[in-house]
Length: 123
Image (cartoon, rainbow, N blue to C red; front, top):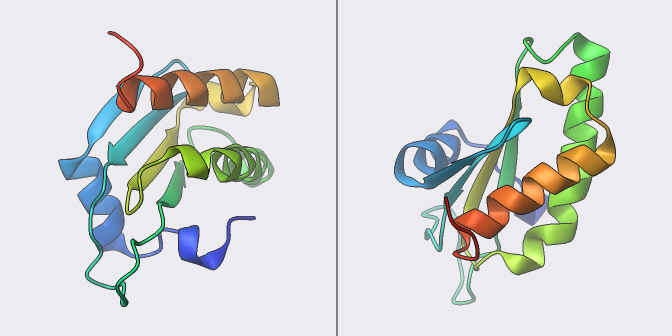
């Protein structure tokens, strides 16, 4: 489970990440990253934490499969939040093949997408 301060919940935040952020597509998922976006909902002088949200449509599978994919993605993203710049918005959208993929395959695609978005990879 992601801590409350690291969750994307508002529709506007999802839209900001998807429309104004950078995108990296992989065979199992697409990652949208809006680096260092300041949240109008955050208060205080400290840098806001990176926040993540997930989109898993019915194309991935039934309810059980979708929830399993979301749990795996939440676990993977939670371990990688420290690599993201403060205030970042991340949306991970699972593609239909994600329902049949195992944990290691999802981790490999997520790592490759994040590496590309954070400037470590090439097209």
